[in-house]
Image (cartoon, rainbow, N blue to C red; front, side, top):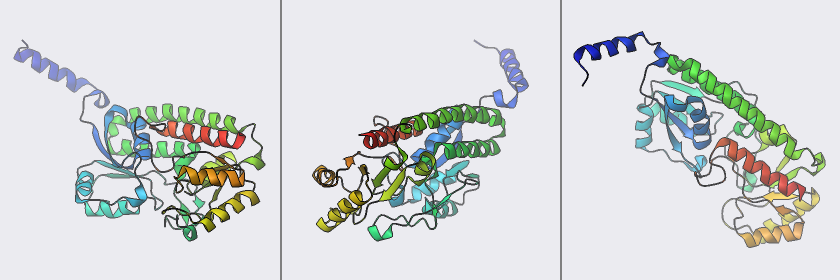
Length: 303
């Protein structure tokens, strides 16, 4: 059984440790959505405890904050959001919570693209003039990682070296991921890299890897598409010689098969755009999401 002398000696020894080496409570972080939370987890590791507002397989566009969410933010030391209008409700929520901690806007300083409005087809997001989906480009994601590391270090100076080291290691993996994605498209002619999606969220990925992502004409994400809408989509696919379709709003396999049969395009399945999958799905992490999307797009384009 330890004596009082042993306890005092142990306390004195702890006092001599550098600040970063002492045990401390994890930094409470609230991340706006699942993809961002995964980046924070990689950078923060055991020094952070992450609470995610919009979880896996959930739609940030349809998210309705509750008073409980405001309390979660009020109790946090750090809040991480994408910005660029992606989670427009977040600014109001932070204000309502009277948040006094560190706010990290992961998109700050990153070169953005102009949004390609698709409101006429029923799947615009109302983000304004800037496309917020910067995370779909692994090179831009590296900048987001560095921004997160700097923000965490500002909130927790004792962990600065750990955050920077974690960010550097993770960015090495993201650089390898970027090289892997490039290799998947190396043998696919540039003119052949044309894909139709209903969710206009892949412009940054397309810019990085030379793929044209086009919005489906006449198809909405609400309900069943009309016969006229399907006909317009088939005409678009034929006219623009599109080889692959990834259409979230057309979940009915029969309709997908009809479009593929009439247009000659290949059904590529589901792409992950604004949320990760649950842990038992194909895209439980950011890296897995990029790999899954890439494998599906490349297979459809090469087929």
